[in-house]
Image 1 (tube, rainbow, N blue to C red):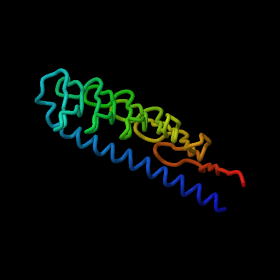
Image 2 (image 1 turned 180 degrees about the vertical axis):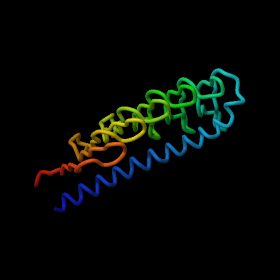
Image 3 (image 1 turned 90 degrees about the vertical axis):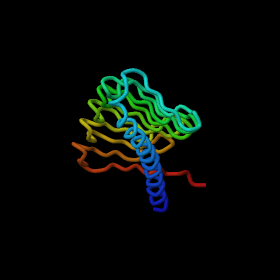
Image 4 (image 1 turned 90 degrees about the horizontal axis):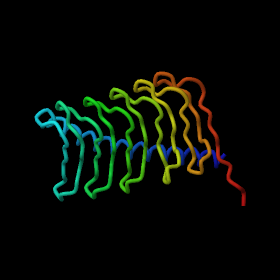
Length: 178
């Protein structure tokens, strides 16, 4: 019983940590994007680059008809990559990668017309999956699976149009006794 409680506690901590990292990164990126978007319609078409006050590259991308287009990359103040996204006509289109402070991949997702579409993966270190799911027109759909750092399945949950559908299947780690 203690192991089940500890497993749930550890799983909760891990989920909270990943959520916080992604939320902070998404917030930081979105505030940068808002500033950039306000200026895009006055910029000439072509490559765009921005720098931090310390002259480190902050972002790089393309503008077409006043909208983000092609590959856009954002870096942190130390020059470490934060995100790599593709845009078409001002909307995310294709693969997007988010990275941690050391430049390690945190997540990989697909977009279509600015909405999450297709496979979504969050990672532990060394690109081991932490969470794998699927989006359809911006909503969770299909089976979502969370993994233990060791690679075993922690739980599975079915979604339909962003709503839980069916029971959650939990797996509890059994540690060897000493």
